[in-house]
Length: 456
Length: 183
Image (cartoon, rainbow over all chains, first blue to last red; front, side, top):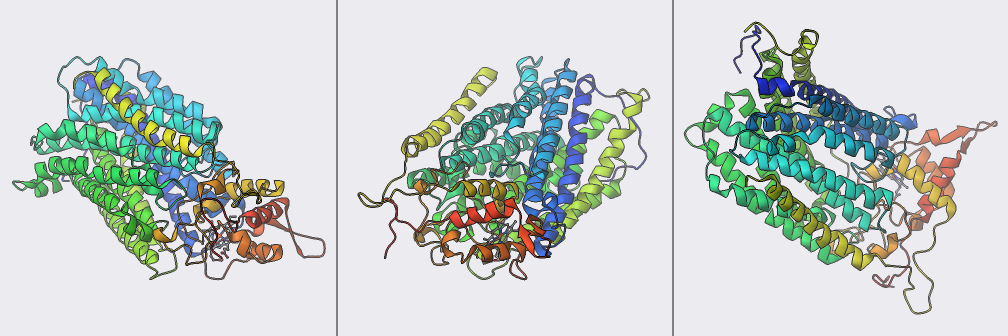
């Protein structure tokens, strides 16, 4: 993290220049949504402590703000950022120069406009009851098209690539790019457009939820980890021959894990058991990922080497989060354990572990690497980078302790109230503002002068 | 694995497998579930929902009550819901077949409401609870669902009336073929 604070600019490579515009658009919107979502998170955390806070009108009532927060976080922050990372990664691995950047831009604009409209409708109270499907069904088609236009390009780059070599990262990107549109379309159809009967809706929703988190978010983030570890540490991935098994078992089992989140629900027992088995089988790909990631970094002082590299420092935290999640998810899918933690803050902690401590930390690490490549500038302030890392790292660890520990206490009857995560939520906001100031500094300073700096 | 068609085909296969394996077979088993009497010749359950309750569900949805409340009672073997008094029996799939949108919920910041209608005292009391929830609890006040009448008393809006009708309709105090009440 010892970058000089003066900012020389350098030429972009041809490949980077060809994707710079959409990647900047995706990142810029992701950062905006991140800050908004974190602000709303602070408000809802206050509301849990002080119910009268902004409680006087329907617009800012807890139920709506909570739905808004999670939608902006997942579809605004995570999804936009992964559009950017997948596109940049794939084109730089294939050396593919994107000709139709404007189409990707259109996709990004459509995606973000539909999200804005959906967010407005949620605030107005026009929403559905399933988490992350709250946005009204009429935005579905536009979202879907926007997603295809924005996220399709890695597949195009791969099939038209000038170089022949194939990397593991590319499999995961291709897989995740395909999974989201299929899952989203089927789910919209079966939950909102022609709703399945009764509790089947919940079953479809669990399928969507797990596919979204494991096969779109986590899978894209895994792709990035597979790229950054060898790239930034100069090591080759340990036990590389396991990667095919790892990839296929991950995709095969992940989409069966939905019912494991519905234990004790009115669904047939065999469906629930299938989910439990899948959650346990997920330990296979997780073991392989652990061997690949930790195995590569753990020998010969690799961990301390990573610690001194901004990108790898974030990625390192993320790797531990991923492995911990795999273990906790398997454990919490066993019936006895699940009976205790179901419906408590523990489940909030698990979700945070995956979508924040793993996926978001990978995104941060990747952004520190990619933004200089596509702007030709260095990061404005190393101090802000430190502030960002430390406040988010401390916040995420304390949030996990509060929710996982507090949730366990709730379930075993040791406490009645819902554990408050106000302090870490506030700290996250600070970290995100530090990050976004730094990032927007880079994104904005070139807006007026085009994409190819002339002085090297 | 250099061929995009191979990767795509494989990924589609994995998705199709889980879709057929859990969603479609779940549908085969549950899709044709109808109302049924607990004993031959008895009343059909679940009961039809009153129109006002159906409107009330929309209010419940639009205020995001589902963020804090679940509507499912787990069997005694899978949690202590029944011991806590959330319901006299566990919820079964048949209980939900008439509901246009199912609000099982995922978090319990407040108590489960699957059987709330059976334990709620009077409509007045429910209105009172929505206006002034228990002190110190995380349940927000929904005072904006009430207006002040000419004589200064609080009058429930149409939304509040529908919401309370909905809350009153939430009941699993009847026997169903899958889960009998043990009396």
